[in-house]
Image 1 (cartoon, rainbow, N blue to C red):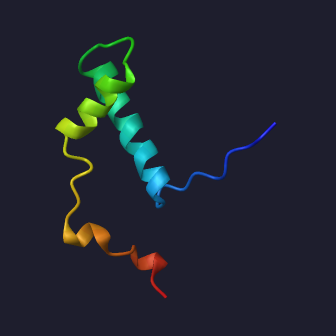
Image 2 (image 1 turned 180 degrees about the vertical axis):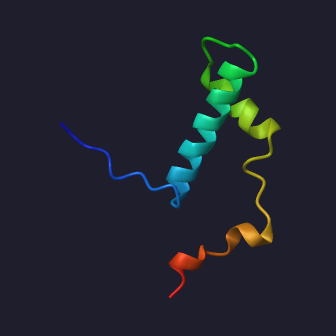
Length: 66
């Protein structure tokens, strides 16, 4: 069986996972949605502007600087 690579919150993949979990949590708790479609989750992420990048977002974390 194939295994997934480790998921680090500092990686782009990890940050996407965090955004998805936050959107699902928000939709379940605040909106009382028992089921959420992929389209609804993507729309919630878009409505919260979580993928809107600013110049400071492109800088590495202090721990990642050489």
